[in-house]
Image (cartoon, rainbow, N blue to C red; front, side):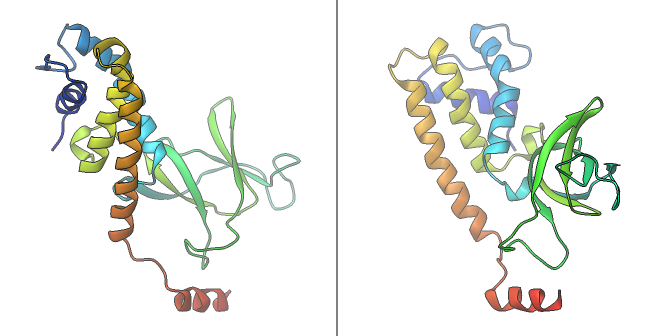
Length: 203
């Protein structure tokens, strides 16, 4: 299981830094301070950048405004509360349509005085989303590697003496993302065209 300190040390090692952290949260070195500056934002970045299977959640949204006869505004029929633990909304889930729906239900992210909203014309809306996970022990191994490259790119300007290291880190990040895409496909079973047709025939 990974830890914040381990991920930070991977990033530092990739930058060629000789300094390693004992505790990323309490060390007072320049390296630790820079890690703390970027770490949380980089976790959010990597979570949002790829639909990680291990971070997938579904929830029926809580209605905020709008009825069948009175739309919430001139663009959308309903507004729903954005899930508090969501890092990224992937899609609306529609009964009988499945992930391969050629015409996915439209939605838009907005907000009111209480926080983020999801606007859509769908009733009883359910969403698939990426969960905001902050505990490094729950991270997938490829996520850890991608996060270390992303963190390395953020640390490079102030830590590394190697020219172009930030760009190199982001190039490696993109290579790792391709690996993550392949692994995600291998760890799932997509609906066959025949199964999709059966579902559409029931609508």
